[in-house]
Amino acid sequence: MRSLLAIILLLCTSSVALAQHKPYFNVDSKGLWVEGYDPVSYFLEGKAVEGQPSLSFTHQNATFHFATQAHLDLFKKEPTKYLPQYGGWCAYALGANNEKVEVDPETFKIRNGKLYLFYNAFFNNTLEDWNKDEARLNKQADTNWATFKHAK
Image (spheres, rainbow, N blue to C red):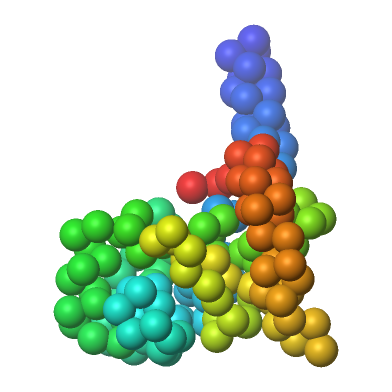
């Protein structure tokens, strides 16, 4: 009987802990990262390019699409080089409000070899706000990101 109670308690505790975790990557309900955009294209082409479902790769439970086989191969060799900061959530919202907010995949910035994505809709381009106070917002976003409990 004690063993059964211990198992039930463990299962309940695990369920509560999982419910508190937020997804690491900005993915949809199917696990697709940022609407299927190719993370390598930001670095190599300097623009956002939609990937192809036929060229996909799953990394840390997120599915990434790529525009070319070469991009996919580069990502497989060195995924951390191409991953966006903050899992692909809006850098500005994380720094200013400590919130995970969706992004416009075509609103981005590469700074010091790192990719940052931003919300841009309804006349609110957060990249513009980020650029006005980048040093402070970047530091705060780094601090805020470190405190999130992520499911991986």
